[in-house]
Image 1 (cartoon, rainbow, N blue to C red):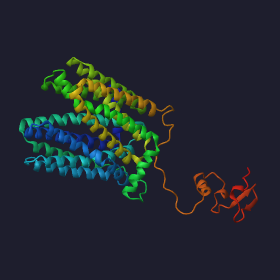
Image 2: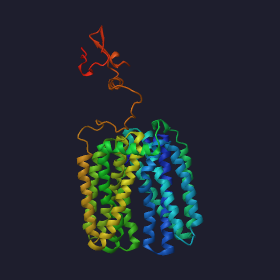
Image 3: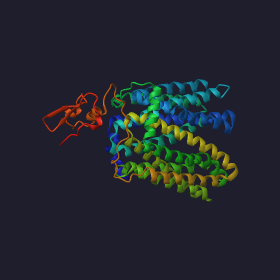
Image 4: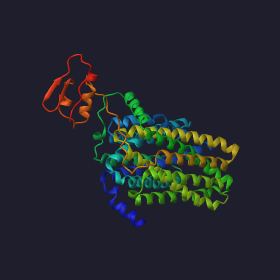
Length: 473
């Protein structure tokens, strides 16, 4: 596997300058995000010592995807994706510098407001990047490209969190962490600025307003059952999987009696699983089908969550968390690849925004329900319920997503073209749609008909068109 991974890194998507720049920009900016997120948690915990205050921060960070996801998708489909990414990096750099100034404010609300604003601007970055990656990476290499992106995100989040802990623990300077994050956004800005792939070519001519584009996107999603199937599977997946984020710490500390200082060691099992999963997909991505990976990943995820609900030994948690990380990266990569392969580029923004909105709503619902039910039913009982929801998501994936035909045999989901203007008969539109028909059959005069090859007849004015003579071969 490692020889395949090395060859993939040398000759895979990273050989393309545009994707290499996007990959590095994601790696650096994600490192900065993790640095700021963990520093904010440490800052709020130091000032209040309240878990409710930290939970409030998590809500403010999660709300923008729910509130602005669809709007971000509409704007991404209407404007240059690269410019949206550049504006997002620039604005987030300024907002993070605001944290340097307001870190000593007497109230936490300015920090909450800046965290909400930064997450809101970031909600425009993700769908723009997804649409641009679809543009610069060929379909056979998208699985490997997404796996590399997930590996970069994993490494950046781990290292960003670790560096934040070291900076705050050794120097106590939260402002330094925020300043480094602002610098990472500046570096990401420079990398994205060098991407030469034009994204304007993929944006269809826009003649309607933002609201009309929003409604048109919703109608396009409603008309395509495959998108609805993906949304249903994603909602069930996040309803089951997001609960684990809330229950993992109580499971480790309260149920398995693991000392708090050892929880980071057990989290390393999840990281190892994510790296193994992304490395395997990057190595064999060209031979794997995204739809089958989704179904298999969901069933693997269900077994892992069920294991969390049944284990009584702390050392078994390390093995189960390794499977958890592998299942998580498999699902993230396969979902992203399937969407990129099946959705036309002019719809990527709105479809991505809808996915982000559904994921945020399902995650918030799952985490809120898990917090309430864990106090009454117990942590492991709620985990078993989450495993059942994940298994239901796997069944839905098998029934609704897995193709019974050969891959690529189904048509790409595209936006319906706008209606033709002017007074055109149905026969004229059919003739333009099927250019192989005879020229006179597509004539501008719908009353002209041919009988045989030389005889021409014109239907009399006011004649019953349903009794017109048929064409002869």
